[in-house]
Amino acid sequence: MKTNITETFLQTPRGEVANKILRSCVHCGFCNATCPTYQLLGDELDGPRGRIYLIKQMLEGETPSRQTLLHLDRCLTCRNCESTCPSGVQYSQLLDIGRAVANEKVSRPVLQKMQHLLLRKLFLSRKLFSLLLKTGQALRPILPASLKSSIPEKQKTLDFQKTAHTSKVLLIPGCVQPLLKANIDIAARIVFDKFGIECIEPTSTRCCGSLSHHLNAEDEALAIIRNNIDHWLPLIEQYGIEAICMTASGCGVAIKEYEQLLAFDKRYADKARTISALYKDPAEIIRDAINADRQSLQQFKERNMSEKQQTISFHPPCTLQHGMRIKRMIEPILENCGFTLQPFKDSHLCCGSAGTYSITQKALSQQLLSNKLGNINKNEPDIIATANIGCQLHLQSGTSTPVKHWLELLL
Ligand code: SF4
Ligand code: SF4
Image 1: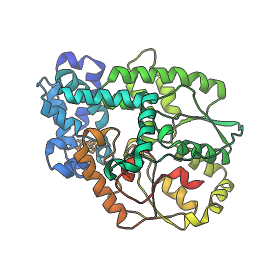
Image 2: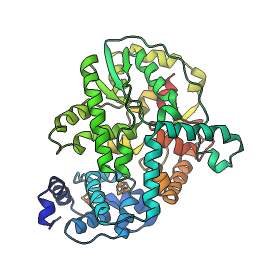
Image 3: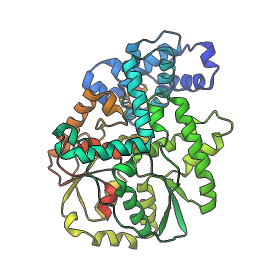
Image 4: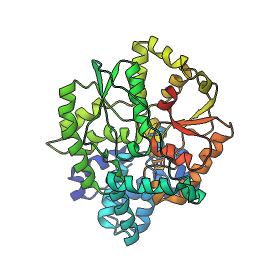
């Protein structure tokens, strides 16, 4: 499409990127067909094409309003539209720019500002989050069902004795997952160990930066990312790390984007490129290991046969299938390990978790959850599996069917 971006903005790196992306869109509207918010609300401005127009108008000098912010806020950043777009429009990168500009120009309601600040403080402070979680878990038996379903039960942690291997990956623990579901990373360590891969864990890494990024605290996000890079690069050199990995695909896709977020930072652009290039999802690491050593897969086939007689529906997180474009990689691994998978309708659509979206856009999030579980539960699977802690907890909040991380199924 033709653009007429203001000269001052066009001269900036963000302006140049936005202009290029806008010009790649031919406004065909194919993307609307797979957009969850467009499907629910039926408003052009709550679909990707409409949001692209809103951003275009804003960058061309039109003053954005709170209504503009609302339409941009309602986007899940699920990137389903990117998977559908025939012109390769990099929608999420444009949305980041659009949201940043809208946030600079429109003042949010005070309550919303406070909510965003509280969420950042809560998730970025391990002490505070741990205290609240422990309190919630202690009170769980007396809580009403609606609250109880949002607080995961305390897990008994798995035993694992580390073995040294030549092949090493840097396993990043993330901010709240180790407190909520510590066994997911332990499962990764156990499974990788069986393939002859050792996990090195950085000692001081917390958040990947995506939380602040998605809550419009850009400077905070970039400071976290630079700090992570400074911490990880020496470890990569010291241990001869072959890949960086996280068991939450929502955080993984954020690391893949470090390169893009720091592209115009002279000191960090090359370092960020190195980090993003080294990132691999656990599925890619296991697929490569299976291809290199098929014998190892036999170990998983022979274990827990009783559990493998159960049926599984695998929910692919958007960050995995649309963000990292990893499609149908986990399903064959599970099938090759002896599980029976049950496909379900609309598996390409978001479950409504989307980071803090389930808190900031509760009504839409709940509608998407209900649609997703309705489709999954038609087949009455014994277990629902997924690859992201956010989706896992969100899905579990709406069903009594156990929802597990797929790596835990390999144990
Ligand atoms: S983003 Fe892609 S699919 Fe959507 S209107 Fe633009 S060109 Fe068409
Ligand atoms: S990212 Fe998802 S919610 Fe946002 S416009 Fe694209 S398809 Fe719609």
